[in-house]
Amino acid sequence: MATGAAVEGRPDARVLGALRRPIVAGLVLLVAYVALSFLMSPRGFLGTDTGGKVATLEVMKQRGDLDPDVGYWAEAEDPTARVHGLFYTSRIGDRFINVTSLPMVLAAEPLYRVGGYRLALALPMVASVAAAFAARALARRIGSGTGWAAFWLVGLASPLTVYALDFWEHSAGVALMAWGLVALYDAIEDRPTWWRGLLAGVAFGAAFAMRNEAGVYALTCLAIGGLILLARRRIAGAILTGATFVAGFGLMYAANLGLESAVVGASLRSGRVSGTAAAGGGHVALRAKEAFVTLLSPFPAYGAEYYLLAVALAGGLAYLVWASSRRRDRVPQYLVAALVVVVVLLRASEGLRFVPGLVATTPIAVAGVVLGWRRGRSRLLVVMALVPLPLVFVFQFPGGALPQWAGRYILFSGFLLLVVGASHLGRLERWLQLLFIGLSVAVTCFGLAWLSTRSHAIATAADRLEQRDEPVLIATNGFLPREFGATYGRKNWLATGSAADVQFAVTVVGQAGLDRFGLVDDSTDPAPSFAGWQATTSDTVPLLGDQLRVTTYVRDEGA
Image (cartoon, rainbow, N blue to C red; front, side):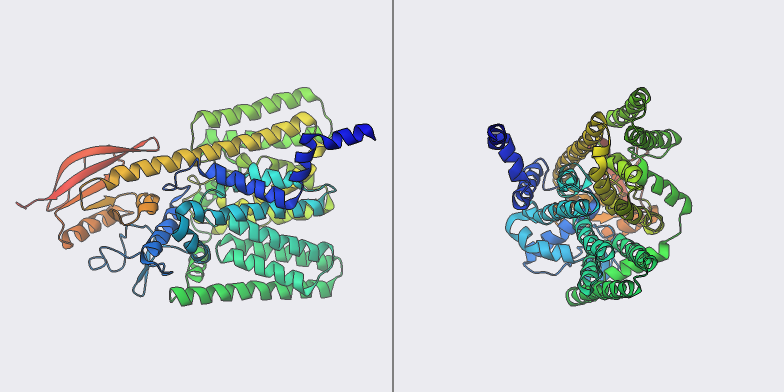
């Protein structure tokens, strides 16, 4: 008794005990996110979609309203917003709308108005904390432990750590789907009730209001759950769960449509969904490459050598889990572990950039597949993680696989497999547990370093470009001006996506009565010529290892 009391009284034991209290654990995780956020510049982001949202928040703050209209300085010359400075801006009535979903932007507006971007980050931070608690809830249901390993791994060593520090809907989407799945899991494994089905449907429906892929996960998870209930001859439970799930999902979908109609006067989400569905199945070769990259690869590049290294990483991790769980000879395991580490070091040697693959950013997910497949309750989560993947790959936005972190469209699959893997890590030898956890921590730190570097580089480039004296800048890469959403309005931009758009943008400048403009590209070819305009000076602006070339054009009075 005396020895036990001494151990209980140790400071480290008291700290560990406190961290097992949900309120304390949640606050510690939130404080960690806040501290990490100060490594990032509030004027740079993980992707250009974030820039469009922040530009919208900035305009709303300046006007003091909740209208997401970002305006357009060249409305008279380009009424359809063909070359609007924020790429993918649509004209809806008399408004120019860049955001594709409203809930998170509207929820963040009061925070942004009071404390700017840093305070608005409270939303994705709280969402990642909520996702970590959902991970613990699921882990407790499929294992015999307390679920705290899943909580801390999701919270501090997963893609959700990175997405907690960027104003995007990904962490909120995962958190909502995760808690929806907790309710659906209980309906399947415990007892179907009307409120569990309704709660699951509401959660998935709320996620769908922000993320298209939530619709795929909702459909597949409900179908899998229904089939399981039918196989167990619980027909009434299957009908009750399915009906209430659909009702809850439909309720949230209708609520979002009503919100969009009230604020914008048209539906944003339904148009986004129909466009995605119409494009589904196209670009087959591209989609196949992007599916491979976003599922496996640590390299943001295409090429046979990168594919081989990605397969070596995934295959090596799978072998290590299989061999260790069966207590096979350690010598081959050590050799394979060395191969895995070499692949990771090769990726790190290429410098800070995106790591697009689920396996590369969530290595414990591999343990989830290998270990969870043979466990009844764990197998359900593995199936719900894997079955939706082909549909997500068919309908995800094509062309954006490389500049993203952790296969952002399949984050929920990675989340579920991480929960399963964390729940069964104890079945592996101690050294391998440490290797998997170490890889997870290392790649997460790599992502945080990349976000920090990227955000500061964008802020520096924005300062350089906004200080130029040309009245308007034309970007040949239409996504570029959206990077500078935090200072939207300080510089007039036109964004193009083709040579024809560039020519049209020059026409817009001329019709606006301006006598100078700057063309921003990354080409090393001679500057293009435009009728009625003369190229004068050309200089460069560094951005993330590349050099943006800015060529100044003046009106040719002799033309």
